[in-house]
Image 1 (cartoon, one colour):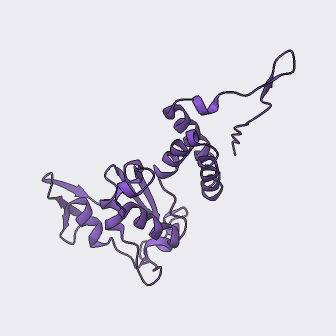
Image 2 (cartoon, one colour; image 1 turned 120 degrees about the vertical axis):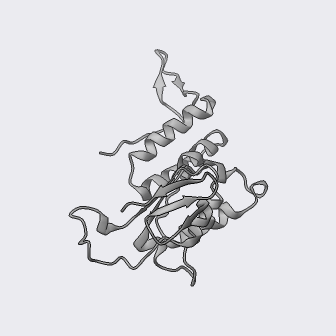
Length: 193
């Protein structure tokens, strides 16, 4: 089910004397706009949602940061070029960018088969750098189409493993098992899959 959000610039409602009234969208608080954009984005497919949020961010100055925040909370990594360009953007000094993009990222959802297992311009995606430059990251979700129902055969190999740079970025040491030791908090993290 698709929800369309239209933020009209003119002719939204009319008074009894047929004078157009434009709601003061641009004067809504940042947090309200971010929630509106997040809700609208969540109801669209990835490509349409990205295009809509980018167009909305260019509509006016008041919409720019809330729309980009909604987009970057879980940035879309739809293609390898998009993923590699995000690594480059997050690696930039925040004083050189219009917004503090590093602070906006809360979650990554990464397609193992299309994004991390393959190369772009001869390079694999630097997942460690992606995580290191996202200080507010709470979730890194690696997924593969074979993980969707009817679920893959357990004896099929995906020919991919978690990169060591990811463990380094998370501050954990791997000992070739499913238990990981976090060197920063002296706790143990378990991988399941």
